Length: 539
Image (cartoon, rainbow, N blue to C red; front, side, top):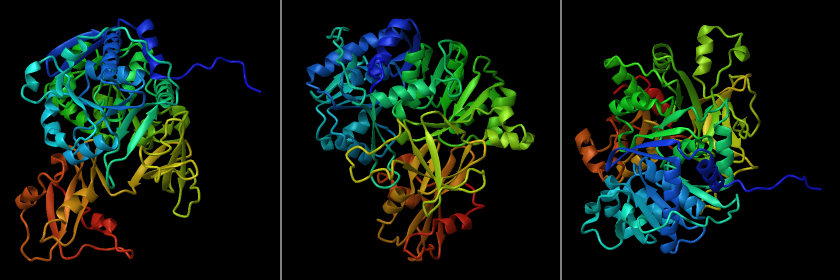
């Protein structure tokens, strides 16, 4: 016997229609390549999303087709979010910071039909254009027609293209389990893997994220998302803003410039900002140097990696802000845990222990379940002491990677690859990573890819890469080479050799030589011993 309630579909279209009817006049401020300060409303964005949908129809885009974006945070990118997904296609956001070979792999694996890109990524796409076998058109997100001069008939300008179309579009009735967005991991082991979100998963994630014990967003907020829209949908902010009706401020390509961020925060009345510790560190240095008080900014959401204690204390004590640690993954849409600390829950802790509690990744929100298991598959107690492999499950957690039926969850749980503890209050803390990856500025760097590139040198027998703590970027790669030739390469020679083989920002900060790289019994590099050897190393 079924219940007697209505069964309306949970789709991104429902968020768009709600935002258009209830919150049409909420302002969206953007910096773009052709606008120092562009102002529009949510209604403007949703109207122009209709133009996008009509443009897609002209290109014979069908339901489920993937449409790629390589773009910063701005009003046009948000138009694509809604115009693509609500028309029935899949909005595939590509991280332009990846190596060109990975961008090419991702676009081909997804069989993208069109690519919308910002002006500054034209050169990137030109280098791999011939390799993109499924892409029929490259549409540059600008009004400046000169940027495509001489690039060919398959290059066009966004503003010129959509100007020919009506705002009116007959949005289809979609199933909530239809795919909506696609985002690839950063390729920490081998090629990147695609995570395809459904309309249902994103709507549920949005509803959970705006709750009081999550991001606690209301229509009185003004949000500046520093996390990019090409990375896990900017943690869902473009959907949250439309659902609750708050003001949005987009910094575009200047998202890591503290002077610009400070100015936007002050002038636009930003109340909430979302980003990684690297950016918060740059902002703190700038506002300290210039004696600036960010009076309207009351909440700082921190993800990607843990906020250093001194930075946490500065924003909390000197800027009177509430710091909200969160944790998640591309495979989790991304929200998993949040650290809204409640004094009564931990009233038996002294001041120092209470502060340490604040630095943890937090408790899971409703919709996310956590489990710790040891190497034998047995569950680990939530005592804050014993660590285990962190497993997760929930309605916005990936079940299977895109185009990868061979990689599935085990018994309904997703293995995060993180080693964690969970205390008696339910607060989770990441203690280590089982994957040999480095997190720099909130972005993953693949140690394996750097090692493989380095070992393609004829004089290099063995090379290993480990993460070393860095005062600005949290971690940076240290390249360790087993010295067999007796004629060591200089750091400059290593950089020259790796240039073009890895992303520029992956370049190791230093090179050290050892007589022998330790190996495990199974023939793998013993990274733990290398980390112990270089524990006191600093750049």
